[in-house]
Length: 83
Image (cartoon, rainbow, N blue to C red; front, side):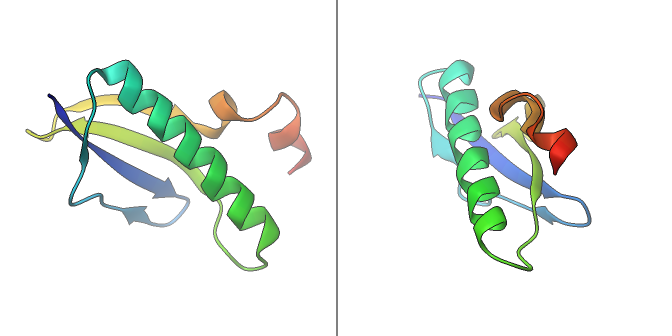
């Protein structure tokens, strides 16, 4: 099963996923990234001072960039313009 790394991108920081996880496909890794990004955004909104994530970048185990999941893909339209 393919191994993927999901790096979290903030405005001024990048959190490297050193362990990664196995998913049957890139689509499943992308779905996981979308769910994680929603959760991180919600936690940031509910917690004053916590940074807001901008995206999650998906890499394979050979460090090849495969996809990027941005907030605009996971939040309802208008949320980012109001934020």
